[in-house]
Image (cartoon, rainbow, N blue to C red; front, side, top):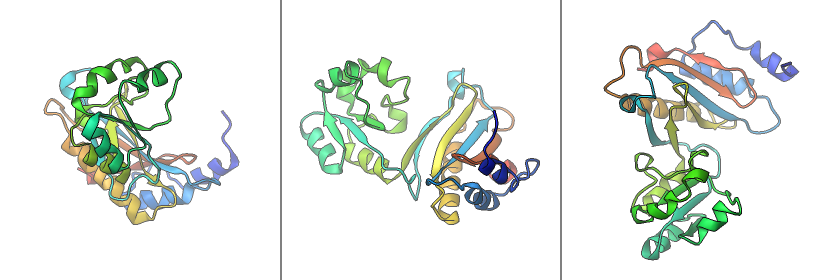
Length: 230
């Protein structure tokens, strides 16, 4: 695939053989993000685990101190007082069984995160086939199955992100936007890596952080020196 002129120019800024300190990587990734829109800055973290084994799964959530720069739409499945609480906390959509046909039959998916109270999981479970493949299924580990809907909604709106391994044992997550300051991006990145290190499974052997790459939506990947992260 032929790369665009802007991408080719950006790659000239990066030494592919070098492992960069976080602060240098952040400065470079901002420099390389030259698209006409506010590019998302992402971290791609390859771990020395085998996610096929339940005892080596890495999954959790963390609130980034400066958020992701993205407006997140939250859907809460709750009833009664909890539904009122979710509404008051600023959830974009709140409902119960009546939302099932809308999502299942009409393909309504205008939300980014789904939160549910435990008593609603029987209802939400019926949407597993739709929400599961999109990574939208509420999960206690990510704090999205909870009675404390106020905290859940507040955290998500403040910049809480979920991280989990893909099939190749890599975690892909946004850490901000190109318009963020270098300090904000570095803060967010360190917070994320700290959470991933803390989530290291006891069964993980050998080097845990295999490789860490930072990139912008349209820019080249910048390798980070993992030895300085753990």
